[in-house]
Image (cartoon, rainbow, N blue to C red):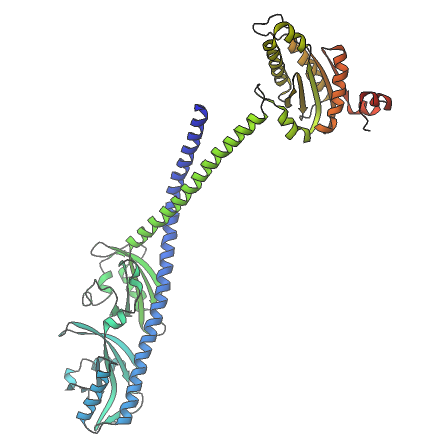
Length: 489
């Protein structure tokens, strides 16, 4: 019992060792798998956020066009009425600040008129005349950041209150569009940004980073340590040319980040997704724990299964075993051997068992049966199944492909070995047996009767072997078959 328990323990330890080895191997696979899953999530979020930004910007541009249509309908006659109309639009909440750019560069708002030299938007319109654009603007006085939506009048200058205007600029608090970016869901370890091809931030969702520091995305990457075959100049060139790519780098503060860059449609904007490398590590750990958990569960089930199978085999073995190792009981014959196809069948009957029991005692008789079983197994066990059929009778189903000469020689060997058997405490007991053998392929249950008839003939003389081949059996007369009780053709 202790030996079997130790064997189970060895099997369990082997499984645990396999799990440990697979864990190490799996770690590298899981690491790449986790990384690919996160990158896929980043890409999906980026697509979502880019759609939000596109719709948001399109809506704001449409609002500006609607506003211009309304102003044209109203057509204020003086500057005061124009400022009141702008103020009304601001109060409605469409935009936080509205400006009209005059042809001379002056800037009209609800607060008054700024001369051309004080117009911070003039440069934007100079670069993007007759075009729509969105830029980031820092109101340093209020320490707030805004998005500038600019639209140039595509037709001739529009005239209100006796002044020709060439464009409109409006402001929105940057936090409005920042709140629409969802990449920050990575436990605070990720953020998204929109930059232009010059690296200037349009909006940055990373609330932990001061919106004014840095002013340009390239400031983060110029002195970075890169983990892949890429440099700061190559990053800048790819962004300037609006390429889609990704890279990893270590920032000045020592944090390692994965960055994905995607251009936003046909604008000069690019979408920047950035997540800390710790996200990959955490995700890898989760995948690894999950994988190890599954492997451990599978191993536990397998170990339990092996134990259960072992117990079932043990019970089955006990059910089929006799008292002699390697020799089966009658149960094995009834359940298995009787249906098996064999090369030949042997029946053995121990001679004079009653004489041994009457003169030496039943313990001597039990020892005689045991020794006979041992002899049978030693001579025939390597070529067939040895079964104690009952009492002093044994059956051997020989499945090995042996010749008749070997078949006969083995049976003679059984008697020869039995002659030399000594039974401890009963030196006067001499063993002999009657053996009947049938040599011919068939199902055990079908050809059993032929071997049984040979045993019947052998028991007439005792201590002898009587055999018959399939050809000999077929040549026997019908009368002889009837006499033996065998009536099959």
